[in-house]
Length: 143
Image (cartoon, rainbow, N blue to C red):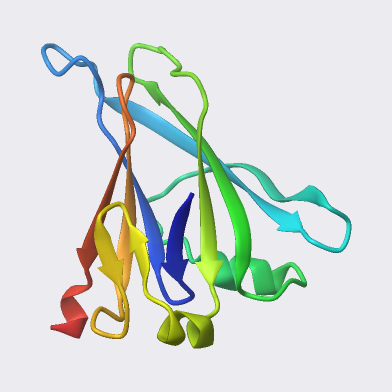
């Protein structure tokens, strides 16, 4: 489970594996689920969508679908390389924290402290046939 602030954006990064003689990534697809506390079940917010390097903002997607911006989300994703090889589906659970609660409590995300001192981040989910790596980087516009 990864904890992020409401303003955090997510980008998917795909790299063809193995790194020697790769054919290259052709397409990446993703879908987003939201945990519905009132019904105690997952709700599919949208089904498989072609990823076009957009920034994904879970809080905004949640609100668009009638939920509060904060809560538990799951992103499912996979890529297909130019040779037609489809990797298995991967997923990441992400909790969008209420900014008010975030100011009272600092949460550790993959070894990085998320508190008042670091207000804006992009969560980059790196895709590949071997491993999923989560990278956090401070937005350039906040320096």
